[in-house]
Length: 164
Image (cartoon, rainbow, N blue to C red):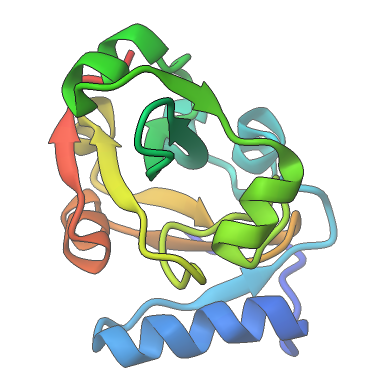
């Protein structure tokens, strides 16, 4: 599946994600689309897939250690913060927009699963594993890349858990 309207030249943030992916040694291609992919619904519409195939990156901060946590959730799921809190054995709160940018180097709506300024413990929603292909943000609210769930686990070194 190739999204319609993709552009050839990438913006600086999307190009940064492409370089990070290239360094992983897995052939994944970032594309920028004319329409927004800021939300899971917008992204699914833009690439022509189910909302559940969108891998949304959400940043949390643990309450005691202030450790940043990345949860990559299926676009059709709402993260159960209590469940994830039990997994990390600390209370969690959603990171602010400023914290997300400071920790990842990207703005909300374009946070990719890789290439963050600060290493993030990563938890991957098990529901993503049921799809052959998924889509993730790639640095800005119009950039995405397609990959398999196993590639997502590989490039993030994430732990697959039930997050919803």
